[in-house]
Length: 87
Ligand SMILES: [Zn+2]
Image 1 (spheres, protein in one colour):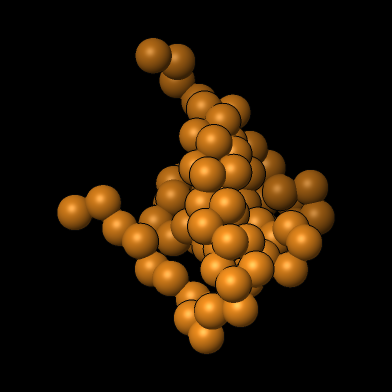
Image 2: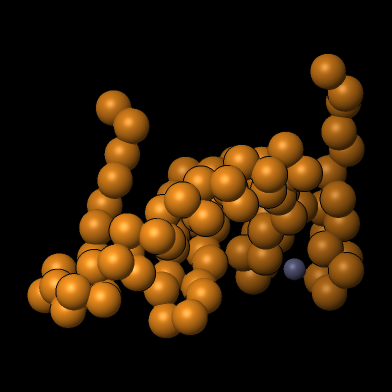
């Protein structure tokens, strides 16, 4: 396991902190929000830097989650928001 040093926010010139944030992605009118993801976050504007491992996992997950939302839209479902959790 590598020891990571905090990246610096280029805009505010302060070290980002390792904390939970919400990953948001939208494509073709479908928005996916993944809360409670650890990332390096600027404490001033909330700008997050995700690690490559986290990005890989997020891309896989988002790709899978977008499909049922697109199908729901195709069948003109009145349900427009879903919250899915692993418990
Ligand atoms: Zn900043």
